[in-house]
Length: 96
Image 1 (cartoon, rainbow, N blue to C red):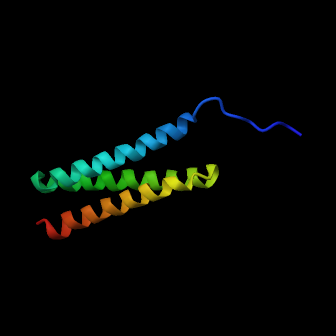
Image 2 (cartoon, one colour):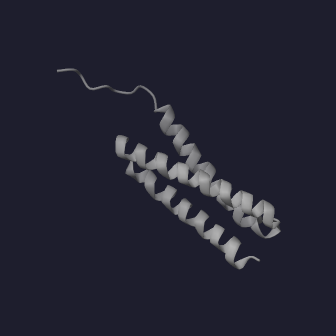
Image 3 (spheres, one colour):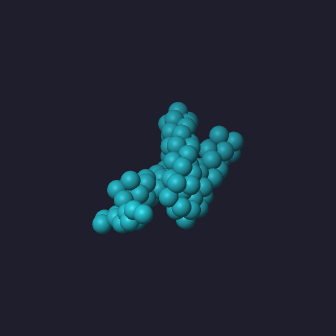
């Protein structure tokens, strides 16, 4: 029977993924602050890019959490995605 594999250092992919989650929250906070100062063109482009980034991040999160049993990562990603879609809805329906 083979011995279980023990890591000697943190998983680099795990660290990168956690930094992507933090980067997502920084983008969302910046977007909340600057949304009223943006023109419609820049607001629409920013909203679409943030939505695509969040969709990719949610997809990666579910793959990573299922594989490595890191389900604690799902909550900040899902909350960030819901917040980004709420900001998009606010921007398109109530801003103009």
